[in-house]
Each structure stands twice: as structure tokens, then as C-alpha cells.
Length: 328
Ligand code: KG4
Ligand code: ZN
Image 1: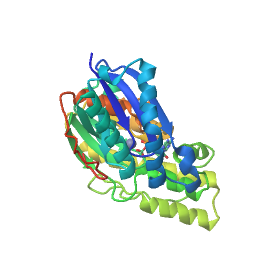
Image 2: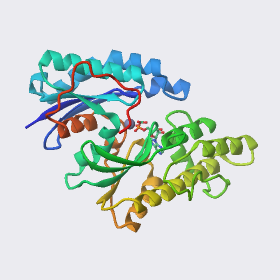
Image 3: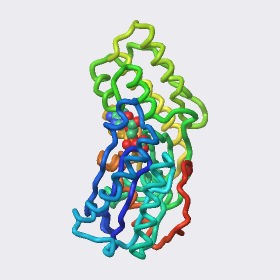
Image 4: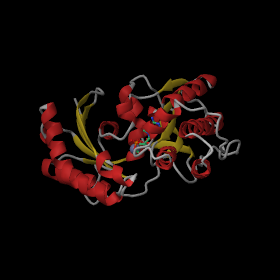
């Protein structure tokens, strides 16, 4: 049975995992840096890189120990090689290179976005290519047609902010702290989603792209006006976001042939009202709706190890570069 060690360090989670060819997560550890970045209201790249450098090696050692395994039991070392905050990506990739060299195992450089895109297959063996993927996180906001390993058609991206970023900025405006998504969702439950008039950027436009910068500015203006309760702002923001997603996704799905399912991935997939909206969009298009378990939706190393399993046989050179930008 093939086993891959996966390493993730592209943002603010330091993570390692061991996954086998039967979709079993043999062990995984995640060290979150949330507390280190919270005082700044967002991820500080320098702090992130230093934290990865400090924590990654012992974390990998502990992950191997959890599974009672050593590097000799692994068939490959897979690590995120981008896109992401470059300092962190370098820490993970260089560590993977050293481990691959020392253990004489192949290095597999993984695109973090591919990790997200393939993660639903780790959770659901029945999920067949091609499927439609909505990837919504703090750094990414895309609609993809996932056709196979390494085969992705990107139908939409954001022209400014990612959806998670819009949640985080709204949280900051409302003084809710970082990360903002869960706090905005919680506050929105107490508010009226129709109370504050907010724009639905790009709604109705021909290409299914996203834009959230204008929505964020409108949230700021609404807050500064002093006319609205914070809960109403949160609820109205979330409602506007949902309507944007629905409109953009309906447009994209209309352009996609033969997909088997609508899959959501990325940290924003945790949002309950967004999930409910996606469920009904999927139903409307006659598609199965797949949402991987939350631990697989947010940044994690199991998805990187799984992408390594899917790419087994590949061996990347030791001079492979870490890439801050790397479109799928
Ligand atoms: O995938 P992820 O863990 O990291 C990357 O950005 O790659 O996603 C984190 C993002 C943050 O922007 C966070 O605010 C958002 O996902 N998020 C949420 C919720 N939980 C996390 N956004 C809305 N509602 C939530 N419940
Ligand atoms: Zn991510």
C-alpha cells in the first residue's frame, strides 16, 4: 500500500499528514498560527515564515510517530510548492527536498490549489471526474471544471478580493477580530439580511467572475454612517455574498458540460448559509452536492498528501522552485 507524506506551509497553518492509497489518513497534525497573527488582523508573512521554520520539522517527526512510521515507509514526499506566501512555501518545500534526499524517496511538488481541488476525492471515493468546483478561501475565489489530475479548466476567478478575504475585512470593520469568517457568520444570525442596502458586484455580467472589493467598501460606508446595527451589517453582507455566488455559479454551470457534481472547497465552505445556498444551486442544475468534511476544506496537509498519491510516479527535481503565484 502506497503511503505519501504531505507537507503544507503556504499560509498560516503548519501541517503534515500521512495518507495511503486506500484514502486512509494515517496521521495528521496541524499547528495553527492564528494566535500569532490575531493582533495584526491578518496573516503577517514574516511571522508566518518564522513560525513554519520553527515548527515544521518537529511536527513532521510527531506525525510519523503518531502513525508508528518512518520516512523509509513512505513512497514519496509531497509538499506545497505554491501558490502562497513565499517564505512559508520555501520552508515547506526545502524541508521536503531535504527529507526526499535523505530518504532517497521522490519529491512531489504540489500546487496548493490542486490540493484543494482533489481533496473531495479523498473523502468520497465515488466522486468521478469531471466535477464543478467552487474554491473559496482567504486567498482564492475560483470556479473550476476539474477534469482529471492536472487537468483543470478555470471558468472564473476574482478580479479583486477573494470571498474569505471579504469576510475577514468585514470582520475587521466590525471589530470582530481575525479570522473573521466564523465571527461574521455568527453575528449575521442575529441580524436582518435585508436591513442594509449593499451592492451585488458583477451580478448579471456575462463572464462568471467575482468581485468583492466594492462590497467591502459599501460595508465600510454603512458602518461609518452609524445608521445600522453591526448584526444587520453582517447579515446583509453575508446575504449579498450569497447572491453573488449564486449568480456567478449559475452562470458558470450553464457553461459547463457533463459535470457529475458541484463541489465546494476552501475555508469559506464552513459557512452554513453558503452551503445551504450551494445545495439548492446544485439541485437546480441536477447535480450532486459534495462538501468535504470541514477539516479537509480548510488548509491541511492531508489534501497535499492525497494529491501526492494521485501523482505517484512523478519525481520533481531538487531545484524545483517555490512559486508565490502558480495558476492551475
Ligand atoms: O482555506 P483556508 O483555511 O485558508 C486559505 O485562505 O487558503 O480559508 C480561510 C478563510 C478565511 O478567510 C476565513 O475567514 C474563511 O476562510 N472562513 C469563513 C468561515 N470559516 C472560515 N468564511 C465565512 N464563513 C465561515 N464560517
Ligand atoms: Zn488554501
